[in-house]
Image (tube, rainbow, N blue to C red):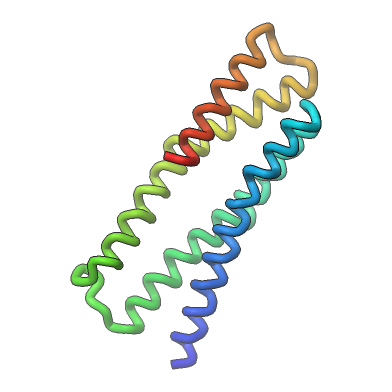
Length: 141
């Protein structure tokens, strides 16, 4: 029972950390938009750093603790519709994050760094706008 309680606490904590930090990305990036190219590049670097070191590990902990909870409760994973749905959503969002959001976000950050450094070619701003649009669509798809 104690192990199960520990798993439950870790599962809920992982959700709070992962989702909480994810919700902060938008305000960080919007604040960078307002403060100019250097601040914008800094905001994107910070979001990327937080995502790699805090948010993504917390989302992975969600999967591990969730599966361990199911195993300790002796639930038949394939007979509970809400478990199937939650695993399906988790898989779909993970694929979306890896295939769409991460590359778009990486490109957006690279372009913002070049613009801040004054190294952007003539179409740097439009290329950045396109990358930003793809990243936003990927985040809300």
